[in-house]
Amino acid sequence: MACAGCAEKMRGELAKNTHAAYVRAIVFGVGAAILGMILYATFAIVTGIVIGYASLAVGWLVGKAILKGSGGVTGRRYQITAVALTYIAVALARVPIWIHYAPRLHVDIFTAVIRLIPIAFVFPFIRFADNPFGGVIGLVILFVGLSIAWRLTAAAPMEIFGPFEDSRQPAR
Image (cartoon, rainbow, N blue to C red):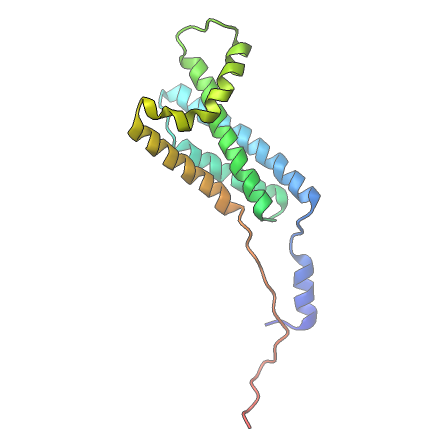
């Protein structure tokens, strides 16, 4: 319960969904997506284990970065941005992994990257030919990673009601 003045003061102190907050959220999110992509690819290259569970960490990292950048502002456009950046980071992490494990490139590295990027974006949906069960599991894990980013940036409405009377009136 709050008095009218306190309720108005609380409304004024809530984080504002401004263009500047969204731009900061994008900048922080892109930074986190790049970091997540690097960590995902580095882990796979160093350990030799390409594990989809890294997408969970990337989703969390991107979601938290967007929250930090926006100053706590959440909502649909932040959710869409978080999911898109998470997907891009996870997809592009495959490119350096594939290049590292390629026995011998018959083209220069730039050409290889350009050719692999489109494949990386559709890879989660086309990998069923080699391993249908692994493909389904990979999509589920990817979906959970995207869901983490989505939930972290979901709008958390805060409604301030008041003022209220502090006692009930007797019935007549």
